[in-house]
Amino acid sequence: MKYDICVVTFSDLRYDARSKNLVQMLVSLGYSIVVFSITDYALSGTTHRFVSLPQNRRHIVRWLTFTSAVRSEISEIVFDTYYAADLYSLPAISAVKRKCNIVYDAREIYSELSTLHNSKFRQYILSAIEKHYIKRISKLVTSGKLDSAHLKGKYALNIPIYEVYNYPPNRDYVATNKIREHWNIPNNKYILVYQGVLLQGRGIVPAMRALQLTEQFVLAIFGDGEYRADLERIAKELEVSDRVYFTGNIAYDELHEWTCSGDVGLCNIEPISRSYYFALPNKLFEYMLAELPVVATDLPALAEVVNATKCGEVIPQDNAPDAILVALGKIIADIATYKANAKQANPQFTYEGQRDIISEITYLNLPT
Image 1 (cartoon, helix red, strand yellow):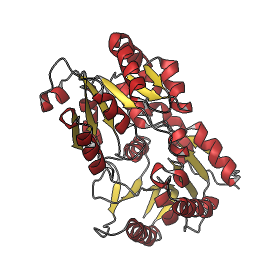
Image 2 (tube, rainbow, N blue to C red):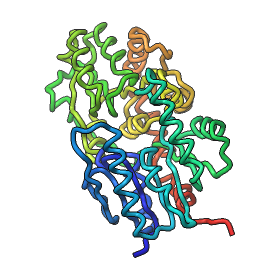
Image 3 (tube, helix red, strand yellow):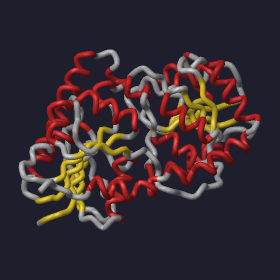
Image 4 (cartoon, rainbow, N blue to C red):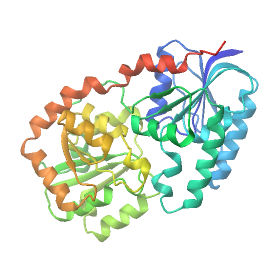
């Protein structure tokens, strides 16, 4: 049987906003799609192939298992376009021999991830893998202009490069007190929201240190990851654990309502890697969609959006606790204006606005 597009993602689509938004857009464009992922969660309108991975095994074993399984299956199906939604999916689709459209979404600077900032060897390995397989692609997708320029220069690319930003699908604001009611938070406390994977360098520890300096705020953390146990320990050491709430992963479709019930969104990323330095994460735009003012770090892409929209305050890259408090103080003093600015900017930053470029990326346009 022939399908239009094969999307391969080494992720769980319940929590992977970028892949989920892409697939749903492709369905709305009328494509026939097969999706390969690591869980059996399927999106409406697609044919889903779940790759069962060995539990409690090293990441590389799970990755190789996934790659082998996907390669075996796609060899029996004909597609016009193969879309690798991350670096870990690229080796699986690059083995396709016939003429087709091979798209690679370099959603991160993988060779310089924050988790690798102390491991030059692992950085080298990922860079070597990317360098090898990127030669076989037709089109490159990134999440921002800085990433595009970096990868084009690094690999001397002479192929079309597109930016697909981490914008959320449009949703209406939901008036709710979900966070406050769930944890019985007093009305005189302002709720700071962090959402995303729990990793070093995401600004969570500096935010906790800011909590030490005032009783005015609490912190709700939506997400999970390898750094969670360390964060829980640090919260106890800083004696703020009674004002830091961990939810674990929340399904992406449910997250917006939780976010709307906060007061300020945190996007105070620490520039511990080039990937973070260039970051323009989906949480920034999800906060804006929820009409939350934002505290963001003075990094090139982040600061450009926040300063242009006046939806929040920008703090220095060192993430000093007192600087975070100063920014929060400015926001709280005029929170209605910041919320109005976020609301006004929303239409610029929705995934639906990228429909034409996604159609162009996935359209099969082979050289004659």
